[in-house]
Image 1 (cartoon, helix red, strand yellow):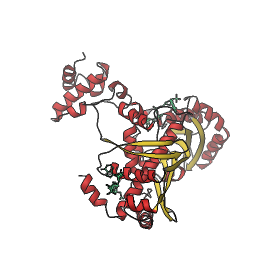
Image 2: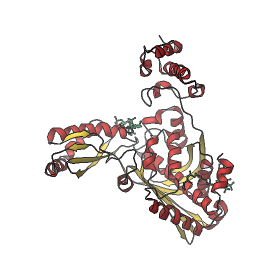
Image 3: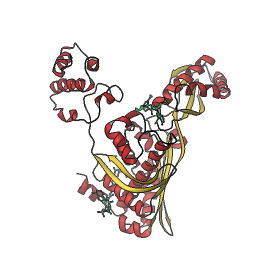
Length: 404
Ligand SMILES: CC(C)(COP(=O)([O-])OP(=O)([O-])OC[C@H]1O[C@@H](n2cnc3c(N)ncnc32)[C@H](O)[C@@H]1OP(=O)([O-])[O-])[C@@H](O)C(=O)NCCC(=O)NCCSC(=O)C[C@@](C)(O)CC(=O)[O-]
Ligand SMILES: NC(=O)C1=CN([C@@H]2O[C@H](COP(=O)(O)OP(=O)(O)OC[C@H]3O[C@@H](n4cnc5c(N)ncnc54)[C@H](OP(=O)(O)O)[C@@H]3O)[C@@H](O)[C@H]2O)C=CC1
């Protein structure tokens, strides 16, 4: 039985559960049956949700369960901008998916200023995706014994963890003790994958070895010292995913003509807002809106959108120099991939292709490094443009004109 109307009837009668439809029909039919059922149940018109362009079979069961259709977000483009990166080289158009009017215009203005200055420099300065299981021990003496075992058997742990992946490499294991809890923070080079599935699977094997060889008992494969998808100082300090910095020097004339302000005003704005204001607020983000560029590029390119939390751990600096304005942004924990996860879906992979960064890099890891560098340059552009808008008192008028 593959007719959506009949399947919807079976949902209504309770013969089938919402998640059982793919056992009886292909992914498109199952989604249509759910829409019919939900439209009747809720009275909502779900036709727009049914107008999706990705291959349902690639999404259903791999990217989403109980698939109903697609949520569409407008996609804009900013650039081009020249990037001199460790992996990114050349001119890039940045895809940005957002519903916030004025955001693409702002990033575009920043990129235009950066490009006029000859482009930005960017480097990934550290890299490593983490997973930190928590183990129960009897107390601190036993914790010490477990840590000593881990220290002496790192090679064995590496071999075990890496047996689950042909790409992932264990970089190290950092132990933490809190009372009768032992946390082992495993860090991996995940090449072009963001790596959360890869590292979780690898760490499960390693954690089982720890359990087999010591008295520690695994409580949870993620003990929150990883730390994934929550605001956490450890990511801001130690980094997670890619740690990446982008910088540029803008001529005084460029600041005055393109950004309608002066280097000195930008420096003062950045110091009073991004540094002092953020410190007083107890913020991890010493920036204006890095999350905007991170979120918009994450949605466009198929990243895990919840990891915008870590992507917002960024510090923006500005200094007035003789030749103009030095501006930088350092993102401590930008978690990106060009393979795996949502990157395989149609619009997301097209956006990665537009950047020239789809799939595996040569060498592996180079594409994800380049993506991190390009996003950092986009975030720098957003910082420059927004701080300039505050200095020239254009923020409210820009959003009046473009954002409503
Ligand atoms: C809106 C602008 C850019 C106008 O800025 P402008 O200088 O008046 O614009 P312009 O017409 O002179 O054009 C300058 C450049 O801007 C770009 N540009 C200009 N218009 C467009 C457009 N329609 N579409 C695409 N690009 C556009 C474009 O690059 C153009 O150069 P050109 O290509 O012409 O040589 C400026 O006022 C601006 O950037 N304002 C700031 C807006 C902003 O950054 N909003 C971000 C969201 S704020 C938020 O969410 C977080 C917050 C604020 O709560 C965080 C916090 O607490 O700080
Ligand atoms: N499990 C969890 O706890 C969590 C999962 N997620 C989700 O995890 C997904 C992302 O996980 P991730 O592991 O990145 O992706 P996938 O689970 O999609 O796995 C990607 C796989 O691609 C293979 N691969 C092929 N070419 C390359 C290359 N050049 N570099 C690296 N790997 C390559 C690797 O296989 P091989 O390993 O065989 O070499 C790798 O494991 C997202 O959907 C995200 O939402 C997010 C947070 C937590």
